[in-house]
Image (tube, rainbow, N blue to C red):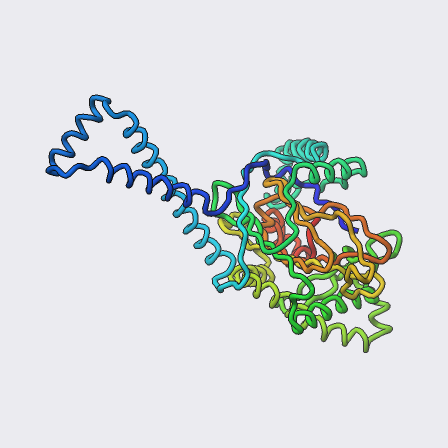
Amino acid sequence: MNKPMVELSDATNGTGAELTTGTNEAGTQKSETKLSDITNEAEPSHNSTAIVKRSLESEESGANPKRSKTVSASRKAGKRLCRARKRKKDRANEFETVISDQSRLVGITISSKKVLQFDLFPEISKEIAIERENKSKEAKHDHSDKDTQKTANLHPVPRAPTEEEQADAAKQVKDWFRPNNRGCTRLTTQYSTETVCLVELLKFESLDQKQRNDLDFLCAFFHSCRQFMISPTASGTLSCDDITSAIGWSKDITRLEILDRYRNEKAIETNQDLYSKFMEDSEKAGSILWDTFYTFGNVAADKTRQHMKKLAESGLGSNRESDPPLSFAIVIPTFDSTGKIASESEGHRVDNGEFVFPDIKQAIQFPSDNICVMIFRAQQHAHGTLPATEFEDSTKLMICIQPPNLQDNRTRKNNPHETRDEQNSTLEN
């Protein structure tokens, strides 16, 4: 089952009217035409110097207030047009330098929202704030630990929401959040050109044969991991979330591996041939993930991969990065028993389970017969997956390339094993 993201109070949120691309341009063109018409009508066939003189005298004496208001309104419209053009240019530049510099055949809808404070789990946020304050007070009196260890202790792990809290959060998302369930959309904040998330929903029928084969292989690989894993839950069963949470990257970021603490050594020793095949497939699975990321956003994929390689090699990272690497996620509807891609006609059904950005009140939905891919700023904007209702054998495989959070970088030198655990292919819920 999907686990909800509870540390949602770290970023602020709110609603706002959607900005329709091109509205300002159209409005200002109308105002400019009107000004031109008035100017032409008012211009008699006299000496131009006399015209300017009479115009100035008229404005000073207030003899033509209607014309003055028209000129003022037109100037404001012109300024709005300039600002709109600058925003459009800045958005295009940000996209090319941060997301992708390749031309796209699919149009992108831009949705801009205001950012106001919004917390889906206020009680948990209060508990975290109190715990953080208490730990901060304790750290001031403790001079034996290193600064990095003190800093790590100031980030308490939030508890899981209760069923009542989850139900309340789901209701708020349904009532107040804008759903996103088709096409390709770029989510931004209203007064910034920064991309919060780029999301695209790909219908099954739109996939070419190579794309479908790659996705089939990816699903089969993750399903095959089960036999070599130790279940992290008391029940002993392995859900899709459990599997992806137990998979990480090799040091050179070329293949996927089962994290040490989840390896079933007995099963691996007993099935050496199958495990060897699994290790061979792991490199292809890793390549498919990076290729899919690169196709969707080549600039973002290159920066993220280089960042993760550098981090894996040195074990250190900057906690003051001005432009942290972006994360990539892919969501695939599957059957739990077989791991295969599932369609609605085959009986697949999963309700709810939206991926949400509370600070801009956006909810990404996962409709049937669609593959969802997205690039998002995991370290700058609160996000998470709400609990889903899965019917019978239906589930979703959610895989994410997500670099470690900034606060984790501070403790990496003292705990190098954590680098590998955090540098995994899961959605951090």
